[in-house]
Length: 474
Image (cartoon, rainbow, N blue to C red; front, side):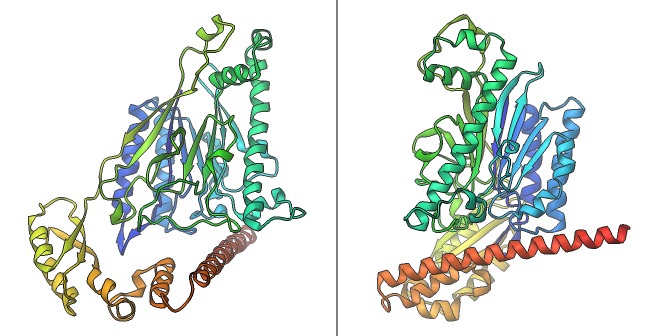
C-alpha cells in the first residue's frame, strides 16, 4: 500500500499582490498524475488547504474539482487512490471546510476539522483490495486552545504553557492508545492465529509485529521544536495558550509515521525520518528560492505474510519505505540585489520565459537614493519579459529605519507581524529587552483572540445562512 503526504496548499494565496492560481492549477494537475503514475492508494493532506478561512469561489471550486477528478480516475480504473484524508490547518475555517464532509464521505474521502468527542471517530482503518486492514489513519487537525479544554488540568499549579503542553501530550496519548486497541481487535479478527504466534513475544516484539501488519499514521498541524523556517515563507506564528512549539519526543512512540503540516520547508525533525513536514507545494516567499518542493511517498513493507514463518520479529523493523518526490517549479522567482547598475545588469541578463519571471529587487547601494524606487520601476517597464513583484530599499532600512517605516514602505503591503516588527525597530533602544518580550507576548495573545473571534463570526454567519436557506426551503 502506498501513501502520499502533502500539506499547506494555501489555495487563494498571493505573493505580494500576484495571484498564485495558475501555479496551484499546475500543481494539482501534477499531483493528480502522480497519484496515477506512483499507484498511490491513500492521499493525506495535512492542513492549510486554503490560505483564508473563507476563500474565494474559484479556489473552492479548484479544490472540489480536484477531489472529483480523483474519484473519477479511481472509478475509471486509472488510479488506485480511493482513500483521501483532509485535515484542517490554522488557516482553514473548520466550519467552512466541513461543509463538503457529507458528500466526500460518500466518495470514500474524509475531512476532519475539529477533534471529535468520541475520539475513535478520528481513527480510520484503510483496507487493501483483499479486504485486509493495512493502515490506521489518526486524522488530527490543528488543535486550538478550546479543543484542548478537556485535557487541561486547572487544578495543577503550573504556568499556562506547561498546561497546554501537557494537554497536547494527553490528546495524542489518548488517540494513540485508542488506535492501539482498535488495531489489536483487527489483528485478532483478521489473523486467527495472532494470539498463538505472538504468545512468546516480548511487548516490544509484539508491538513491532503489529506495526508491520497495521502501522499507525497520525497527522498534525503544528510547530514542532527544531522545525526550520525561513524569512517571509508565510508561516503564521501558531500559539495555543502560550505554547508555540511541541517537542517531538512527546509524540507517542507507537506512532509509526507523523504526517505534519504548517511549516513550508520540507524536512524531517531531529533526524527522525518518520516525523516529517511535506512542506508547501509552491514557494510562499522569495526566501524559499532554491529550496526544492516535494511530496512524501510511503510504502508499507512487503512480506508481511512471509514474516509468519518466523516466531520472532527482526530486531530492527520499520513499517514504511519513505521517499520524497520533487515537485516541478511552476513559476520562476528571482531576487536581484545590489546598487542600481548591478540590478540593471542582472535583470537584462535574465532570459525570457513563459510565464514571465517574477522579480524582487533589493537595492543595497552604499548611499541612500530618494528616487531609487522610481528608477527601478522604470527599468522593469522597459523589460517586458520580467515582472517586478517586490521592491526593498535595504540601504534605507539599515541606515534610516524610522524614516523607512513612515516614508518609503507601503504598510498596505505588510502583514500584521511585519508592521509590529517595524514598530519594534523604531522603538529599539527606547525600552528594555524584558519590556519588548512582554509586548511581543501581549501581541501574540491579541492575535489569538482576533483569530478566534474571526472564526466565531464566520461560523455564526454560516449558521445564519444555513437557517435562512432552510426556512426558504420550507
